[in-house]
Image (cartoon, rainbow, N blue to C red; front, side):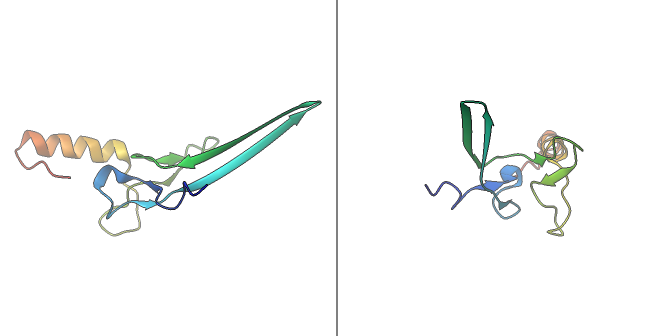
Length: 88
């Protein structure tokens, strides 16, 4: 399986600002029951830590370091569209 070869995170601003995604797996055993899963992370938006709710990855800002957040990007693009300067 090579799902993670081109997987990216944060494509909301286009691939220039996206980050590399990846593939993850997990397993759980409870008595005779054994459950496992494989997940490819390839999303338009952001990746958050489920415990701390911290933004871990997503579309990078103009500086290539900070994460403005997909919600902020969507709102900015919507407002730009309202003024006639909409772009991706």
